[in-house]
Length: 368
Image (cartoon, rainbow, N blue to C red):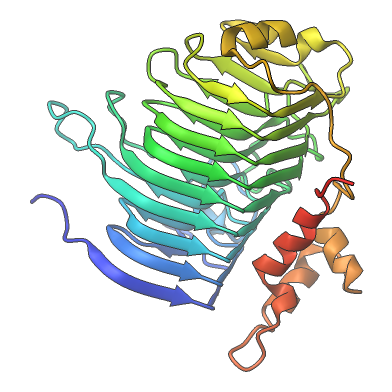
């Protein structure tokens, strides 16, 4: 009866966790419920599946939407730092904050003080999910969440569950948080067009989204989405850089931001906004419309300081593949994993850690 007793002060550091799967049940790389944990400098690869799946059929170890590299319900005072998350069945990091089964009790804060910092995510369908499963839609479920300095690339590639989607970061029902310094780059290249970098929904307030870069995401949707007329009550979106791609195979290519929020709720300013679509009336969406012009965007958001122009980067097309090539290694994922598995207590090579790889990609986004 009642909630379990939280387990504090768990440290999991410099492990290689890979190739977990089940033919009869759900399977994760690491499942941890009601814990306070430091997860640092680990390598997670190919967890939750043995072979490509279809229709969430778990037989023969098929990939399903229920299997992930990590799955953490009701976390608190937890840090994910400097890890590498590769090729999950579905999600790199799935967190949940589930409401009580008693529908007479409104949403409660069930997860708090979570830091996800300087990790590398490659492939899988979804990078970081901080939303959850059981939601009564009547209040926040998370408090003080920080997602900072991560690099996410190639989401949706390989179609492990045969779903065509690549979702970066999901924000749902946060009461206070920071999303800062993250890079979302280079996915949608294999025809999966249900893509976004950041999605903000639910009963969300007092969240700062700043200093993030979204580049070369091919999407039939929008790169950043705010969707909650009566539930999103405050946020700031500033100093971000968005670059939209004009892709001939996308239904509505090049849209940057969807603002389906009551006018004037957010505080948006000092961003760089640019789309390869020459018609600026098709750069945005929201307010029930598939397209919103730059001027309409300014009207609804009161954003008068953001610039409709691109940045002159040193080399924005850096990827995990170009990094491996720069070191003289084969550029396929299997070869990368072979090198990662050589990490050991006696031979921990910094070139195959997320801080070094992330810094390589991040330095490509320095302005000339």
